[in-house]
Length: 283
Image (cartoon, rainbow, N blue to C red):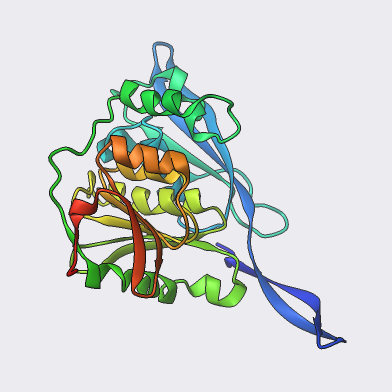
């Protein structure tokens, strides 16, 4: 696998002067996810997604994507994950990954297109997006009583930042990490796409047989969107914390599905938009 950063020559302009120097940028390449599954006529293969991602942890990305899109329900649905196709001529990366499902796993062909409610430009209303989650059987977290201490929570962004090795070189990657109630980072991932970073994290948990992750929280760099909330919900995680702001639909999803949503988690301050009962702190 080629590196996740790429060296480029740039002109650095500072204080009115220009200087040639080398810099590092995050690698961004397409990944095609193919699904192999059984039909009445034998085995079939179909492309289900093409996403721009930072190479690395492609099997986890593919597994997490299929799980959060409810195409698969458990790790045992997968018989193997392998890269295929020729390497890209410019980088040597294999940009196609094939996920083979077990012979007894049924596939809903209607779900092989990415769900419309994860696309911000789809033109449907928020109620339709939330109803779509209920249709696939996602239930509110009414019985989840996991709590996170304030003093633990405020330390997570710094821990996540220190785990971003490629960000240190490029300054151009998002990060996602899951953490325990004691503040231990269990899995951390980087990617040019924040949704990909979350899929990589969830895929790692899935392949390690740790889903649903009802006792873990999810921390993301940047903002909290509906799509990230949806992924956390499907994975069973009761809390999503973000460095930046949430969207209105992310807040609505968190409220209706009894999730805890924390935004602007910086330093020792943060905002709780939903599920404040899961945050333990002194007034």
